[in-house]
Each structure stands twice: as structure tokens, then as C-alpha cells.
Image (tube, rainbow, N blue to C red; front, side, top):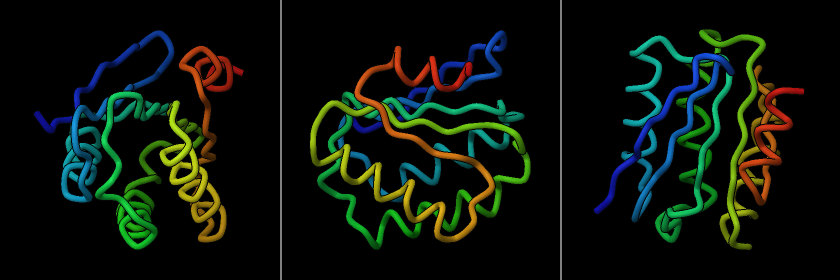
Length: 124
């Protein structure tokens, strides 16, 4: 099963997107588009703990980032976090954050190993 579930916590102005199975560029972009279409929260966590990221490489990260940046003005002042346990996903998520800074993406991005760490940063 390849899908992205979405959970919203209005009290934290937070959405958690959780890919399950193989995450592709198209699936990531569909999840982003669906979230923005439904009045996005300021804060976002990508919970990648159950995602298979083998279909994602640097070029695909750039494609996702370009798409997300075109919509970011809808959530000024928000934050985006990635939660990932594995080293490959951690590195890919760090790459996304570094590239986001390089292209002046208006939303800060951070990568964490646990959901608790991500939530602490979102709420700080």
C-alpha cells in the first residue's frame, strides 16, 4: 500500500503527513496539493518513519521542493519538520532542508529522529 495519510491538530496549527510504503514524487506532490487545497496549517511534520524512500533522489527532492515553494506563501510563519529514523532518509531530509535554504524557501525546515523532538521544535 502506497499512500500518504493526513492528521490535523488544530490546537498546534499542525498537520502530519505520513507516507506509508513507497514514496514517489507524484505521491508527495499529490499529498502537498491536497493539504494546501484544504486550508493548510502553518506547521507541517512529514512523518517518514514508515516510508520507503528508495524512489527519491536529489533530482526528485528538487522537484518536490520547487513545487512546495510555489505554495509556501499560504503558510507564512510556519515550520516544517521531517521525522525519520533511518540514515538514508535522514540524509535525504537534510538535503531537502539545505536546498530549501539555498533557494530562499520562506518556511524553515528541520530534521529529527523522533516525533517528540519535532513537536518541541514546532512549538518553540
